[in-house]
Length: 118
Length: 142
Image (tube, rainbow over all chains, first blue to last red):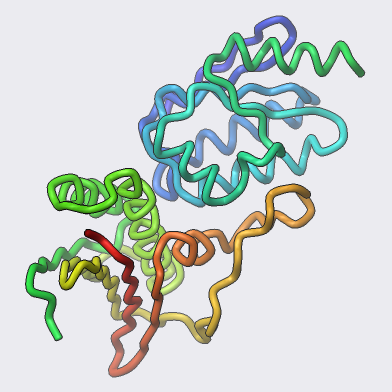
């Protein structure tokens, strides 16, 4: 799976371009996200606009990343599909631990404001 | 008893094949009367069960069958996932619950498959015998 990395206003944006972040196909996404966090990036937006389906393996990648940045940074998602939104809802990841935004720009703005408030 | 409207699908035990089951389940449910807004969740629950069979029962080895049957009867949807691998050593009597999502420390990294299945389906049963492991999940669907 191709994962595109960019930086917008100091926030790292990772965009997996595959339609499924699942047990079969999220290895590259996990590796790239771990790399970003290992470099010390603490504000990360996951652009999930291309992801139509995510299972608990993809969820575990995000939870592991949240633990890595806990207390020192923030991870947000943008452009989640209806299926991914339902996954986050049923696992209660939509209760505040993970920022959810309609667009990448909105997610970047939200993380930028948090950085400014620190 | 076999549901009045049912089908059986079999895939080889490769994680690359799980999407075939997910797509089939979604397509079938989209064409049956029922709570359409829950279709993505049922697709997810079934994929989690198939993932479990491939990863835990077969140790992610390919070349083994995973059978998924889906049936509609008396306003209920029943999905069973069967494999011939080692199965669960012990299956919990009560499925683990999803934490409230307020504290990251309470959110486990693993074990979400059964939690998701438990949230999506109303009744989940597991049986193991004669070399065959079967997870049967059902919920209202009308």
